[in-house]
Amino acid sequence: MSQDSAQKIDRLFSLDLLKAISIIAVVSYHSIFVPESAYPSASYWMDILFAPLRFCVPVLFTISFFLLTRSLEKSSTVSFSSLFKKRFIRLLIPTLFWGSLAIFLRFLGKGNQTESLIILVLQGKIFPGYYYLLVMLQFLPIFIIFNRYLGKNKIFFIILLLQLIAISLIYVSNLGVLGTDIIIFLRSAARPFFVYWFVYMVLGSYFYKNWLKIITLSKHISLILKIVLLLSTSLIMIAEYNYLLTITDGKIIPFEYAMFSCILSAIVIFVCFSSVEESQIPLPIRITIKLLSQYSLGIFCTNGILSLICLQLGTQFFGGLNFNLSEILVIKLISCNLLLMVSLGISILCDRIGIGACVR
Image (cartoon, rainbow, N blue to C red; front, side, top):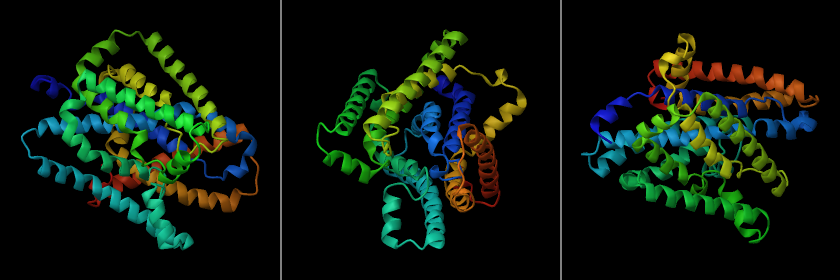
C-alpha cells in the first residue's frame, strides 16, 4: 500500500462504526441478569433470535488485526524485538489488570480455590470475553513475523481453506465420527484455543492491504443489495446455529463461533460498511459511535465483569420467577442499555484517572 493510501485510512469512520456495532452486540450477550432457569420456555428462542449477532467477536478480531497491520507498516524500520515488546506490553496491561480484578472479585464472592481460578483464567472464563485477550496474546508474535505475507491473495485463500477444514473437523467430531477425545479436549481448552480464530488474523491483514479496493466494491453495491446480503447472512447464521445446537445437544459452548457463517458475516459486514462516511451520519450518533469505538476495549472487559455481578444478584432476587419470551426480551433490552452506559462510564473514568491503557 502506498504512503498516500495509508494516510487516507489513518482514521476510518467505517471501522469506528463497526467497532461500535460489534461492542453493542457483545454487551447484548451479557445483559440478561436472571438465570436461564427463570426463562426455560424462552431460552431456545433467545439463542436463535440473537444468533446473527455472533458476528461481533469475529469482526472485533478482524478490526484488531487490521489496525495492527497498519501499525506494523508504520513501524517497518523497527526491529522485531522492539516492536514485539511494545505491542506485547500494551496488550498485557489490560489482560493482567482486568484478569486480576476478576480473580479478586471471584475470590471475594465465592472463595474459589486458587487452582480453580487458574483453570478459569487459562480457559478464558474468569469473566465473559477474557478469552479475547488471551487469543490476541497468542497470535501477536505470529502476526508480527508473518504479516508481510498475510495480505497476499494466495496466502489468504490457503488460510481460509485451512480454517474451513478446521471447522469441518469440529462438526464431524461433534457428530461422533472421530470419537469423543477431540471434543473432550476442545471443551477443556475452551475458547482461547487458536483453532477457532486464525482466519481473522488473515482477514484483518488482507482487508487493510486491499482497503481501497474494498471501499470501491462497497460503493458499487446498492443499498438494497447490501440489506439483502446482511439479512441473508443473518438467516444463514440462525440456521447454522440451530444445527450446531442440535448436534451438541444444546451444549454449544465453546463452539458457538466455530461456524462457517461467522466467517461469512465478517466478510459481508466489512464489505457492506466499508464505504460508510462520517458525513452520512447525524452528529449525535456520530459522537456516540466514536465514544463506543474509542473505549471498546474498556467496555468489552468492564461489561463482562459487571455481568457476572449482576447475574449473581439477579439469581438471588429473581431465581424463583418465570419469564416468557416477551418479558425476557424487555429485560434484555433494558439491561443491555444500562450495562452499556455503565461500562462506558467506567471506561471514561478509568481513562481520566490515568489508567487509559486498560480501556483504550
